[in-house]
Length: 390
Image (cartoon, rainbow, N blue to C red; front, top):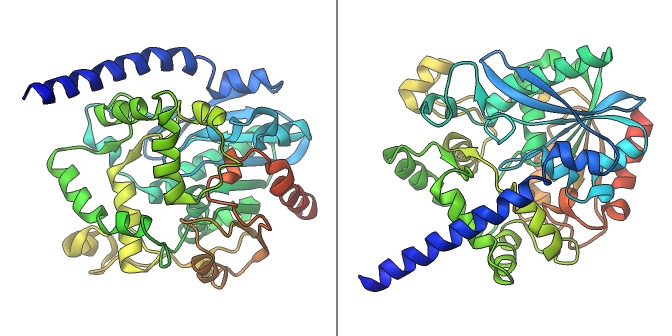
């Protein structure tokens, strides 16, 4: 009993110390301050979706058109595009004169608002998955950008779930295919047939985890104000061992190891915003796709599906309707987006204009956004695509 009390006290002290240090760090590690620091002060926009979510969109003005929208992945924020400063994609594009926009999906720290729902007290706020990101968030973001710039189309670059939502958008709201000139998918995520342990093992437990979280009324995961979020931040912020625990023993096994590209110094920046909030429903939707081996809508159960879809099972997203131009950029060491799963995706996309496998053998799932040398390994492909199709 005494030992348990001591352990709890130590954890509490770590949390308090980490919170104090994070307050100082977070004053500088955000989109507004970091974009200003590297010469392209971002202009914030407030975007309200059809279903009442209030999103934060950032604009780094440039002369080149069409505008370029960058969309983050799951448990992430727009900060991810600025991690490397002058070596990051957002600043590199801005330095080249592109008109850059950084989106944030509902639920993360920039888009944790609603016209009447309280994210801390209303479970209904968290009743969304990446389906709603695609069907509501993306249209609101795209329309705002096109209205503000006067452009008829935009280019988009999405990382991980940030490209998944474009496939859904093109399938469910096909009119938006005409508004996307080119979609560049970094670490493409669609099918999850060929993931390996430990990620495979983790995904098998998602249904059980979902049931447990529902019973204890937890709908938001990794929130910085939630106890589990604070404990994770505390664990990852322990000097010297935080990187070993959270990166070498958690992130690398799940996403692919590339220590040369993801060092301890940049981890200190990433740890201030990642992992970001994700809804329980979003996590379960990925687990559902893994289990069913279909790229499909959310499963509400037989009765719920009958009411929602007039079918006992959720319908698959029709990728043949996704007629926007799509370019896929793939890493051989990506444990989440396997080459075999991406082959399933590319064989169904009717307008795939480019398929590139990085020659760097250790290129993993997170190198696209956080890698040290992406100006060598990634950005040339992106600039060539933007030039060719703009």
